[in-house]
Amino acid sequence: MVSASGRRRRRVVAAVAAATVLALLVRFVLLGDRIFHWDEGRVGYWILQYQATGEWEYRAIVHGPFLFHVNEFLFGVFGTSDAVARGVVALVGGLLPLSALLFRTRLDDIETVALAGLFALNPVLVYYSRFMRNDVLVAAFALTAFGFVVRALDTRSGWSLVGAGAFLGLAFTTKENALVYLGMFVGATALLFDARLFTARERGETWESVAHDYVRYTGRGLLAWRRALVGALLAFLLVVVVFYAPRPAFYEMFGDPTRIPGVLAAGTLGAWEQFWGTWGTSGVSRDHSYIDFLEHAVRTIGSTSLMLTGAAVLGFLAERYVADEPRDLVLFAGYWAAASVVVYPAVTDISGHWSVTHAVVPMAIPAAVGFRIVAELGLSALHSEDRVGVGLAALVLLAAVGQMGVVAAETSYLMPQDDDNELVQFGQPASDMRASLTTVESVAEEYDDGTDVLFYGDHFHVRGEYDETSPGSVGGTNWFNRLPLNWYLERADAETDSTVVPSAAQQTEAPVVIARARHYEDLAPTLSERGYASWTYELTSTNTVFVIFVDEDAPGYTRS
Image (cartoon, rainbow, N blue to C red; front, side, top):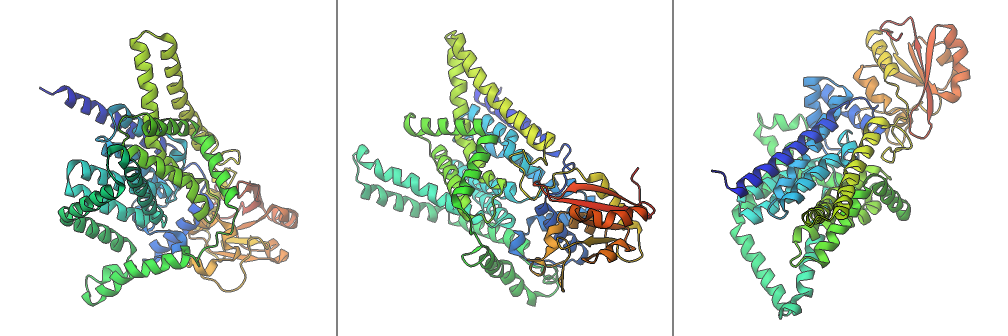
């Protein structure tokens, strides 16, 4: 016979599983509908280059190797669609609710289920799980690593610690701000330790004796866990080396053992030098207004995650000032979330809405506590037949779920490219140009007599020698102004060229001509007379208007 506690555990697991199914559903439905953002386009372009050449080495400006290796494999199996490119992020984001189970020894049943639900439906997490970026990946992997550490402490399982090492390694393969997560963990732990020292006098102890006891306890713990810690370190290093080692050198070392030291060095110290040279103190410029970036982040959180934020504040304050024994997990997550809101505007190089992902994930833990408090108030009112109390609690919970659902639907499905969408960043095309891009790709695939696509005008023209396969080579050129078109043209194997000479564009043999809309009058009379159809779109969310001309007589032209 199953005990009452066993039945309760099963119900919790079933509820978390249901939240996970819902999360996967909302992330995969219509996953390929939105046109690639420019950041998706540049990373996708270089993944295609990797797929074509088999050559890859870590370049910090396009972040970690995870998406490169995983998507290079997926492209070979499923093809190079937008949906396939986003699939691994959608999968990881959809499985994130399962991580709530790692904290069930520190959270009660309602809190565990609420946490899974927040991970499933939060609009920020839904939108950026449907986006080929690393933010959801690093957040999910870092949270899971933290969850395995908690699990190891509560169950005395060395294997959980090894799992933490592996997931931390995965976090470091996605984006360099995994290092910021380590800083958050150290800072939150320091605050918890400080609280122990500060309250020592209330327990009749001195802060010196408490500090001594904790140092001795930590030393003994490290000694007792030495094998698990070594296993965790090895798991971390194995994941890092496998992902960061250059290709094809990584595969070649298995046939030539003399290459192993060089490959291991490139996958560890070499990668670190690349990281620090790009994102360290002398790398990417962060010359921006901190206040502007902070205001941007707060506004994004407020417009997309207002109920979660309110619940998180309630949960943290109740845990900190009302609970008889405040739980370290809730306080830790609260410190982590608050620090993320404050720190990321200082360390990011551009103001991207995706940075709030790193605050929303830890914020969900105290928010789950806040929702549990409201639910318990409602249950208490029900037992005492307080209809007003029941109604208020139900209204708050329904409003929270409704707010998440409505905002998630608006941001991810109804207006995923609109400038009015708080989650849309500048580099997102505002127009649905799917039909025209499909036509361009079809023509480029069929046309085999020279240049397929000619870019016209200063905005798109790239002068001098450059290597499109190298992010460093195209840096500072107008090549980036073409994004995300580069992705769509490369997967069609289109041959491209550019010019600033009007007659060259007017008389070109290329079946596709692309220019800014301000050049329409320069090109339209001649190209229209020659049988070119044209369509106008917004290449960014802020009205970067451009026009596509396509020869209707070109092979592969399919648009009706």
